[in-house]
Length: 396
Image (cartoon, rainbow, N blue to C red):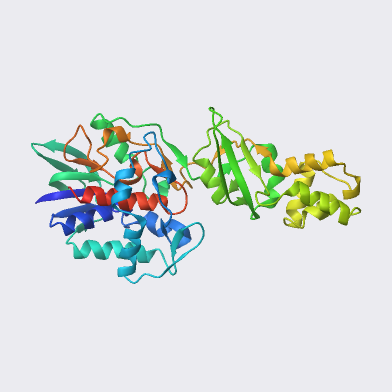
């Protein structure tokens, strides 16, 4: 059978593209190599799917070409997906910073997409591995584990390398290379840090403790990037939203600066405490602003001891710096196993920003995470999936 469109990958961008094309009257087949559709959708947001962000804009994305995402994002906005969710009666809430989560389950978002595909007449085949994608005349022949399929156009929506146990593969990148498209270096991102052995030994006692921080990195040009959100100590290192966000900007060997009191004038507060409680131990005082265990371990790490009345102004400044300019050098990250996204990917200079079609290969489209467009944490990567899938779906 000849299809107008074959979409490889039944994830967020693939299903959005399929429904959009189907509503245009196109015959659409979606192929998924695993048995389960939309696994990353189901896993996301702790099972409640952070499906978009009300404050989404091109500024929330990282790419070698920061202008590339503008066209698609302007034509399918966060409000467009919110309207879709509303039409299906899914209840949701804003958690923080414009992040929208399902009240009940991420299954609801997947069901919205599957229902839309059903209404649009889309056909979906699971457990179908694509072995080869070859041009044939003006169309394409796909050799799969279930036989050959003919199509006028092909959309690659197979994602990046993150969460390999969720079905991630290098399929999109391999196909791009096959058709001589540039693929930029890729790294795991939105990912926890691992620590140097010495730091890990000291901080492992804080596993499970979270704290509001500002995490910062400074690039080689001296440009500082910072995020104020929660940090979570783990038995392997550091995680939580602030760490995941800053991982997008961190390079191996870089320092990360942690400000444990981004919303407090710690120095002024310490001076007030010195006047009010001169006989109190520094660990006791710091335990007013963090857990007792965290205060004890960090004071020991920073070699801080003594009663408040014994500290000079200069010593209080040193204490302030210890907590507000704590510099660590991660040993690395936890890698693709726990990364939420892949940073880097298919060079967007190879892709038409309005249609997602490969400029050198008519009829071949790439959408979603496989492109060199990476969003901040908080629903932005899903919004890119919806927007890029919609853009391709309008023209395939």
